[in-house]
Length: 163
Image (tube, one colour):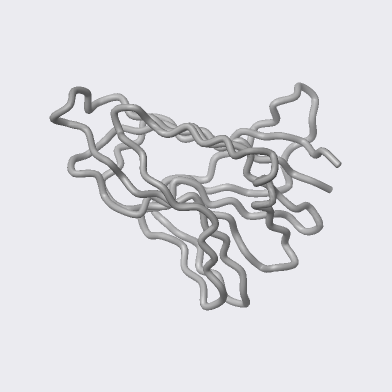
């Protein structure tokens, strides 16, 4: 079953610390699935200015979840004209990262070169990175370490909402 697809963006944000690029919170009875990510930067060009940064995709589940803070809450935008508003909510660029007293499952971890950017599109077999509201959790795309200098970043997460 295919659901509706939405984009969640942040644009022109100065990143100076490890942070949650995206915090995705499913609505009741509407599981979500992360389809793709695109993150880049605009102010640090040239070999001497590039960083290799670690990032991850995490699924938090459990009784107590403390959302991150310090970022913003954009409205997910439907990619197909006329689709309904998303049921899930999103936060971007939280400089205080989300925590849980439950289970923190790392689903993917990697690095990206800031000069090149990050484009992540999993193979279809890996689209099981889903989360529903019954698990009382969130899906996070996390920058695991601070860049060596302030880096102006923009990014998009493509999210499918089922149900």
